[in-house]
Image (cartoon, rainbow, N blue to C red; front, side, top):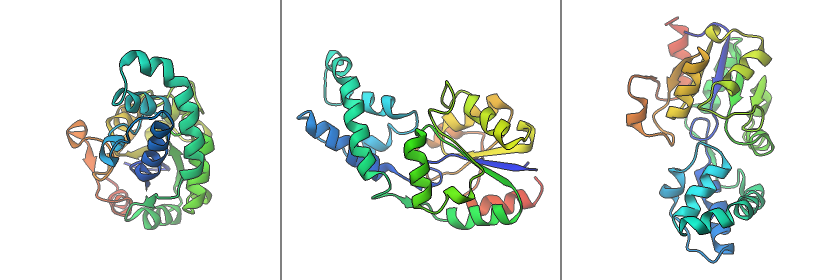
Length: 220
């Protein structure tokens, strides 16, 4: 399956970032004099970038007209709060540090392909000692379109100088699966992230990134 490179999603695959995101979103709602959302609800909105997250969160507490009227200011408010909470309450998923270390030891190129904008993605990866292991980081602002569009995956392949057929993307959601398949990249799913299990039917699954190394080593 993998010959030269492994591409990794960030939120829900490498790091459980939902607590940070929920804290920033609820601070934003508080500034708008709205009630907070529970962690599980905010978690269900993660994966398609800040604007989608904020829009969906506002829709839980406002009428549609209020959402549209407030959205731009709310996005700016969220970004201000997230700049403070980014990485504060997050934690690595089990097997991530070991998996990344073993992938590097095998000589595979590594890239992070995320819908989180680069100014938040790179400091977060650095905070958890992952940035130095990445040969490339493609953020939500690195290409004109985000996942599930294939553009970010193809850009990662281009920067790594690796053909899509020689890559695999590991992620937790249908957006990762669709982006990988549209780019001609193999896909592996992890079961612990923010994506719905039913959206990943038919995907090959590995329990952790460390388990993925053993899967690759078999030459499947």
